[in-house]
Image 1 (cartoon, helix red, strand yellow):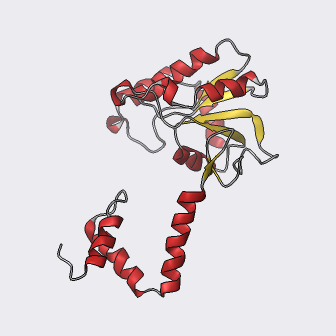
Image 2: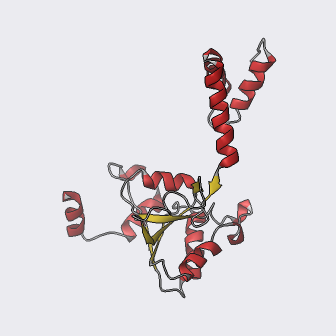
Image 3: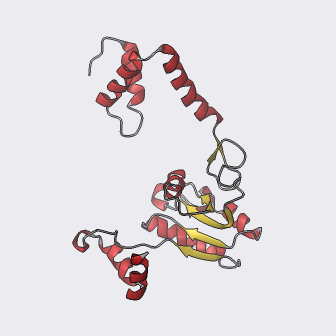
Length: 208
């Protein structure tokens, strides 16, 4: 795509660095900003720059934060004895959006993946063990993606926790509601069968 302005060209090039932003979308965004007041555009740029420069990570759970402790860990109304183990900050946001979970989190920062050169020492596993050692944690909920890497990480962390008086649970996995069996992958279907519930339990849950 040819531009008559190098400034426009450079701005478009920067936007295309963002995930999911192609050149046409980048151009639309740049032209939109061009129509805005300079003050609004300066505020936009300042907000992004301030976010990147001033953002912190929670000293306890490693979630993004404005302060030493994130808003979740610092909330006295959350159940600090229940810790949900997740891979990334996006997982925290996804679970929080359900408005169901009232415990706290621990962000690993990834999963064990030898192919990608990611080992246990590169993840926030030791800090999780330290939290458990404090005696304040009663349950760890494994909420990692149902992949080989996710299962490997769950297995590794579970072994590390086996000598501590903490209950380890996992989020339920199975066929999505409304899904058709023929389009369900074999691993998910196998898990659904292996972790089947008595039919009476399903009826009770379905009626709530």
